[in-house]
Image 1: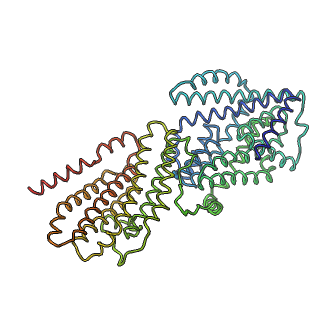
Image 2: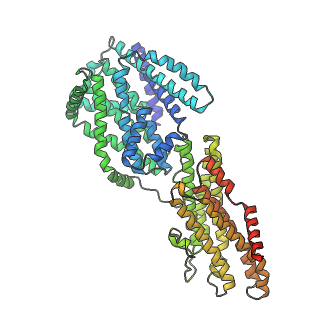
Image 3: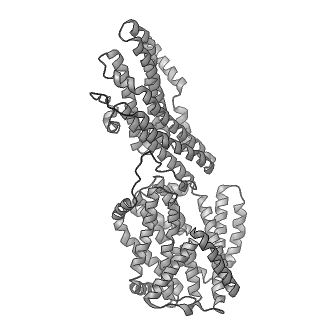
Length: 605
């Protein structure tokens, strides 16, 4: 509703401004071209986020200083802290980085983006950059029409830089011409009141443009043309710093609670920095003069001094906020708590990751892991096993203890609330995500989809297995007790092994070891089928027991085969070649049958 009111007002104000001042057209055209350049640059850098940027982000967030450095370098290279913020929110939402690492990246990006002001003030205003813009546009647009993704990405970046330079040129020319008709400096407001007023103006302008970079270019060009005073320009720069949080806030609407926490932290950082800079503006101005003198910047070069100020108060903000990251995390967790789940809700898959293929794939893998953990909770309770037992070393050394009496648990309810609802959301997401992913990611995505189906089927099958298993593991008849104890122990051990694989570094995992569970259950199934008639005739079990046992071994076989495949999908190789080798070496049904037959023949000899 608010947008419907604001947009006509903006159009009316601009139309009136264009009518009374032709020079305003040039300035606004420069701003428009500059904002258009931001779209081109963002599109260009997204072309390279299918691997490089995401892999860098994964390997540079294990230490706080590395996360800070990554944010600084990424924002410096891309000259767009907003894109870095959006990517970071996507990673955090996907569960691929921690909140503290996300905060470090955001803080570093705020320092990195200040380098843009230095480039504009030190180079853009002193050289005819329009001369550089034209060749960039020509070559950039040629590359944009190429089919290769990397060439297309380079084209977008080159054209984006061309439009950026062209936008600065038009803004600079517009303000130079503007002096002949209207002197905006005459409306300067001195003192503390002026600082607050222009901080508010800078905030609103940046919110409307959704680019602090564009705001800073506008401020610097206006300052260089003498259309705003240095004092008021400082207020505008502080306001632009606050207004730039709008992009991260908008991105967080599509993110989960973790993404919202990061957007809130970004806003908090900007607000605290502004609250420090405004009352201490005198100290900052003195510091800027001292730094400028040390760097040999002319006393009247206010554009470069504004760049110094912009960097200085962001660095001060980071220095003050970095030690407080643990406390900030506590506050954010209280302000934006993790939602309570009546039915399982997705934690990692959001539309925020659609633009970043590896992030999207990582989010689906994390959500599949989430589904599997929910399923383990249902399956263990369904077999009267403490879920904590699966996470302990005992799961691989001994069968799970048997409680004295059967524990009441509704497997159907557990399936409906924590598995089925989440499974449906993941399937819907995968079907929509398929079109957003390059073809080479397709096999990985479908493997995860099949894993989700396997998880759901395993839980449903546990429901069929539960009653007989919990009855016969407490039986005095060892002939029926032993096979059911074996079934329960094999499922528990398999889930324990999958858990331990997840704790290992990726290069130390050997998911092919899980195939031994397929071999063991198939061997038990064939042995029991061959001996069941003898057990009935010998009076050791009843015919009803025998039919139940054969059926339940079939159920157990379904569960184990499915869970082995789930373990491989979750913890197997991520690379295309490595995954292909793993798939080639894995045992299929024919291999297992052949191995069991060979072992049986050897036993007869």
